[in-house]
Amino acid sequence: MRAILLAAGYGTRLKPLTDNLPKCLVPIKHKALLDIWLKQLSNAQVGPFLINTHYLSEKVEKFISKTKYYKQTEIVYEPILLGTAGTLIKNIEFYNDNDGMLIHADNYCMADFNEFIKAHTQRPKECLLTMMTFRTDTPSSCGIVELDTKGIVTGFYEKVASSHGNIANGAIYILSSELMTDIKIKYQGAKEFTTDILPHYLGKIYTYHTNKTFMDIGTPESYALANSLTIT
Image (tube, rainbow, N blue to C red; front, side, top):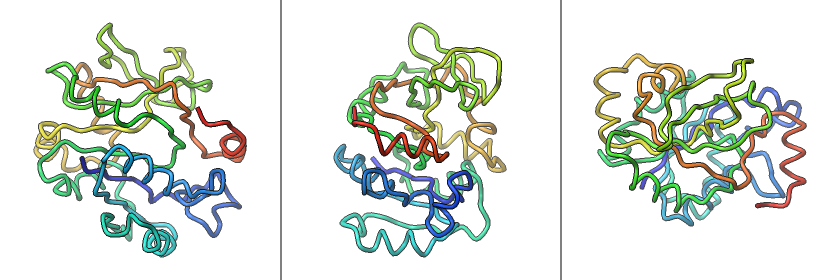
């Protein structure tokens, strides 16, 4: 299964750490975040990979060139950021008409990707994609989902103050080939996957919940916490 890793962001909230280092390369326990992603995915037989870049792109390219994942990684530079949906749409042929992963690679995630893939293959027939979810202590900073008894998304609330629970969208997806065909037809002008595409598929999004370590490392506080955690 192929994977697109979204890694072009500025990491503004992590300054000054990201003044000279792209967020996808910040070290977690002495390993670059992107290296952790590629190892986790490769261990689950996921690959090849496509990584989009923008900020300090040359450093990402240099890093990848020195890893064992070099030959199975395609790097796509975006002179102007396309947005998460824009990147997906521009590179959707990378999946070769097969199901594939779309990953926001700026989170620290130790989920079991074999189980994630298994959940997708066993999803209800009406579902066109599978979303990874996790439990958050800060619901107002996340996209919160409401689920039915089968684990299908029935409601989605993006960073709102009102209480809708604490099950959050991990921004890691397995997209079916059927969904990709639909996106190419209906959403060519979409910019952000979470706001411009996902809301149109309520009732068709299956979920896989991970209890493993999963956290946004976008602030100095959460980044320090990630580096202090015992991995679970």
